[in-house]
Length: 220
Length: 390
Image (cartoon, rainbow over all chains, first blue to last red):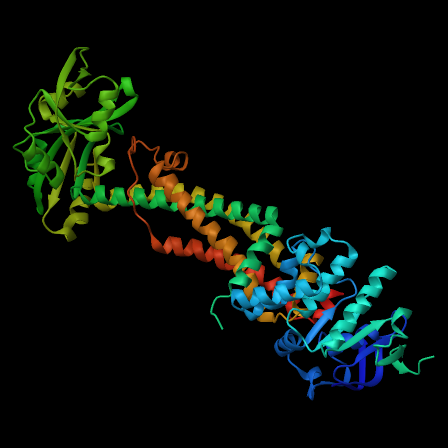
């Protein structure tokens, strides 16, 4: 379970989140809805322990991850979180396979296990045929599949997606939603930050949390 | 967990290849600086070694007459006077002089020895025991024999005497066991022949070598000689060693300036590298942290990266210097060190390696470069990944 308790986040004078509390149950697909700059991405960043709250607690599976030292925050991300960034945050000058392999490098797995894990996600997200292509030569949709594959290569329990359809056309957006459904079916907890209306009335979505000006508000 | 993470190593190589031109430039520059510095040290050490070896084989005190500041021959009987000096154990007179050998454009050193004489130098002693030096033969080094052969003097050599007549000398043997410094252009012959070729009187000698029984007395005797015989140049082993050392140190000094400039260039690059990363490089570290890399993982990757560049550049630099000095005989640097009149030509450098110098070069290049790679990456890696990616 993910639990944010009275969380505030400030970047200098700018208040990104103001006394936010919310709960996400294990296996849920939750949509954080709000305009750009509302604070959705800040919530994802806190759940991923990419930043620390100015005040409040961020509890994941009973542990306050806001208190984790940097080293353990990295290990927490490696073991529990798969993050699909808005601009994918891939390394553009290396191959698809190398990008997907990146989260596995520090684990130092044996070659066979590594190959199995890579093979599994590349097949699952239909990108194996592009394994040796340099990422910058891929289309937007292909790059997103690489980002999803990378987020899943460690088989994390929690998938966070920040504006995943912002750079996709309608067809690719629908394809992405199918991917999310598949991940939910595997029992993963999924949090999507978006202002794309495609997500709001989806049957697969368990909860929509609306964010405005850094606060949880009632959805209109 | 395995000790070495080869995936991390592979990532480091792949990262270097992505910025290959920048890294190749640094690699070449660092290799050249290390090669240049190591070559200078190898050459200087080899020369020092040879000179010390040569000086060790010299007499305790060397006397040469001077007339108006120029070296001049003395009467051989003067050795009896020198022998009367308290503390002087033995005196050996020598006839030697330079002879310009035009066909090969080389200054030969003609050394006159007589077989029956005692010699201060073991190697000359062995030489006179081994070969019968008569008035029509010479003993030379292997390299000089080759040089004469190149000029079509295979069995004998003609020397031009001061009266214009030719003196034919047979090559009676080839000596070994001498240092390159001694051997390279030395022609050993009888005193009589040397006098004839050098235009000296029958009782003239050029140098006296004094053996002193008590080593502690050498400087006292030398002082006494300087006062008693101001028309003689008096040199102890220590004086000769200092003379060589001062010439070498002066040469080394020029190179220290060059090396200073070279290292300054390297440090400027290192400073530039240490002062920051490009936005692309920063973002990559942010991404790596966001997908689960710890600060340690980033640091290890950067250590691999810096080590690959710096260590390989260091090793290439050292191997290049070894080849340059000991295989190709250090063209340019060697000739700058060995142009003085006391070393006419050099055949090969003694393989003398000062491991402290190698260690010093290692310290000045590898750890500094690794630190320069590490510091900016560590700075970025310790920030929040979220902040870095923004």
